[in-house]
Amino acid sequence: MLKNLEINKVLFLDIETVPMVEQWEDLSENWKNLWQKKISYQLKEEETAEEMFYQRAGIMAEFGKIVCISFGMIVKGEKLRVKSFYGDDEKKILEDFIELLNSPYFATGLILCAHNGKEFDFPFLGRRILIHGLTLPNALSIQGKKPWEVQHLDTMELWKFGDYKHYTSLDLLAAIFGIPTPKDDIDGSQVAEVYYQEKDLERIKKYCEKDVLTLVQVFRKFRNETLIELE
Image: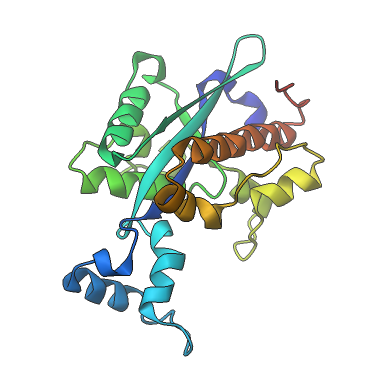
C-alpha cells in the first residue's frame, strides 16, 4: 500500500507546543481549578498540580498552544522541501497552515504524515483550530468519515504492526534504521524553556524541522527506498 502512494501528495509534519502561559501564577483561579480536575487522577503523592502544569500542560490542547508547525514535501527530482510557520501568534500560524492545506495543489489526494500523529499532532491541531474559531480543513476533519477516508499516516502506528501497547520514539526508529540525524540542540522537554525564557523561536523552528527531516527518512525506510541526500 505504501508503495502505491503518490509521494508528492504526502505532507510530512511536526508541531512544537508549549503551556498556554509561562507561570502557574498567570492562570486565573478558574483555570487552575480546571487544570487540577483534569490531572487529578495522574498526580502522584509527592507531586503538585503546579509542578505537573510545567511538565504536561504543553501537550494538552486545552492548556497548551502551538508555536511552530514544520512540514516537508518530496518534490520532483527526489528533492525535499521544508518550511515552517512559527511565532507567538498561534492563530496566525494556524491560519497560514489551513491556507496551505486548502490550496489548489492539495485539492485532492492530500495525505498527512507525522510520528505519533494520530495521538498527538492531528488532534492537537484540530482542537486548537476550533478553539480559535477557525474552520477545519478537510484534511483534519474526520467527523463522519469512514476509517479508510481519513488520509492520515502515522509512522509510529506503522511500526506497531497492530501492537497497541508499543511506543517507539522517532529518534529510536532513526537509530534502528541507521538514519543519520542532525545533532540535537534541544529536546522536546526543553521547548517551553527556550520559548518563554530564551525567547528563541528560531532555535525551536530548527529543532522542529530536524524532526521533519528524520520523519521523511524513516518513511522512506518503510517503503524500502534509499535515503534522500540532505544538505
